[in-house]
Length: 419
RNA sequence: GUGGGUGUAGCUCAGCAGGUUAGAGCGUCAGGUUGUGGCCCUGAAGGCCGAGGGUUCGAGUCCCUUCACUCACCCCA
Image (cartoon, rainbow, N blue to C red):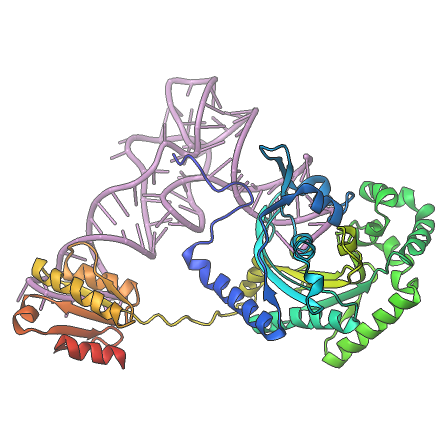
């Protein structure tokens, strides 16, 4: 009877799966270096207030998904439920506004949300995200989207869809929300229970309801991009122009609003083909021009993106994308008898000192068993040392792909391994 | 939080309407050469049949409870 298992919504990334993670990570690092983004790591937990303030009181994340606890000093702490807030906090704390703007940062980290797990959704999951802070230029929005798109392309994902929208700023959004509420006024009784609540507390979210009764109503609703102020409207037009210049196709979707309150102007999501339910979004982001100020800084514009590792890998698998094989040349050293073992230990070490990988047979098993182990480890070569070899001062070198083998002086073996 | 599905060996699953020592394939280990892997053959190890209770002469199989996993809704990554 096993006493413990991984907590609900968590899981182990086993060696067999690591190649996917390695592939995604190294691709991310390449892309970020290429676009001039620098890595930042922030604490796993922060003051709860940071997230409540940035994500928004009325959001699902804050209302029911945060891992919040009181520490021994009586402070309320929260395991980070997303990445942006911590980055902004760090930006302020370290006076990064004094650096050349925009400051471009990326992170690869675990995210915690208390939810019922399902395919592609976990309580602890990994996100990669990047943020460009300190610039309001729509060309930067385009660059962020392009960068996200490049990552997926580099990974080999096909047939993705880019959804785009603009939800305005604090100047024009209140007017839009008013228009939206007016539109919904005589339709409330036709909405689902969730939407009835949203109508009061989080009007924007009425638009992305998945309920069949609500969709047609949302479809006909006034569109945010028709109600933008001049500044937001120009920004949106410029962004669309830049995306066209970049050759990126996009669907403007007036029902795309995102679930975090800090977004302004641009919001976007990237969806895999046949997107539905939990995996409908593989990554997303947007602009958040008021967040830094909200956290106590001066008004600083910013835009960012985040994507989930699990969903990315899920899609790599569903699209049958092969991961580049990692070359693992290695030499296995087998032996027969204690005297040969002494020699084997010596030779294994020598090979390693030469900067090459080598594995010593384990235990004192039959040669057959040792060869099986060599095969299981996909060793390229096996060195066999027995009484005969000891007597003649040589070792047997076996090529594991073909099976040819010959007796050679160990120095000669080293030469061949080097070549 | 709300629904549906599933819990039998490390993995994927059989186990028919309740009946003696619970099975297969894969994997692991060992043997088939005195010192040689992959293919093949043989064998072994490995299960209180998720847990607790009940019905029964008898429960992996039926009933109840519970836990876990899983898919979906909400929302997100």
